[in-house]
Length: 192
Image 1 (tube, rainbow, N blue to C red):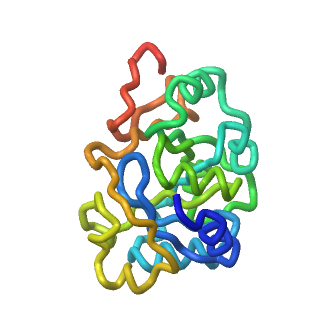
Image 2: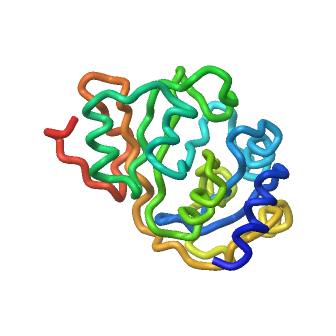
C-alpha cells in the first residue's frame, strides 16, 4: 500500500481514513483518541447506543482493550483470526463510551486487506465501522463514498472490498457463547 507511513501519521493526528477491509470499506481512526472516535460517529450519524467495534494489529493487542478471553474464545481467535470474526469481550476501563456497551467491546484482527496492513503499521486498535451513513448499505469501493463522508475523511485508501457478509459477531461473555450476527466466519455450534 502506498504512503503507509503518511497514513499512520494521519491516524496519530486524530484523522479518519476510509479504507477497504476484508468485508466492506471501513472508517478507521485511533481508538485511543476520543475526538477521532467522535468524528467517526458524527460522519456516520451513528447513534450512541450502537458501539463501534475495533480492528486490532494482532491477537496480543486484545490485552490493550479487553480482559483475558476465555479458553473457548481464544480457540476461536486462533482458528479465525486474522479474519472476519468480531468477538465481544469484557472491556477494560478507560475506553471511549462509543466503543463499549454493557461493559463489552467488539474486536477482530482483520483478514488480508489494506485495513489489515494499516492496522499492523499503526500498532494499536482502530475503529472498525463501515464507511456508510447510519442506516444505509455498506460500500464495496472507496470511490462510492457519499459526498459528506468523502469530504469528512482525512484520507481515502483506494480499492475494493469483497463485500458479501459482514463479520460474524460473537458474544464470548455468555455461557455458552452467543452468535449475535451470522456473517463471513462460519462457527460450528460445538465451538460455542
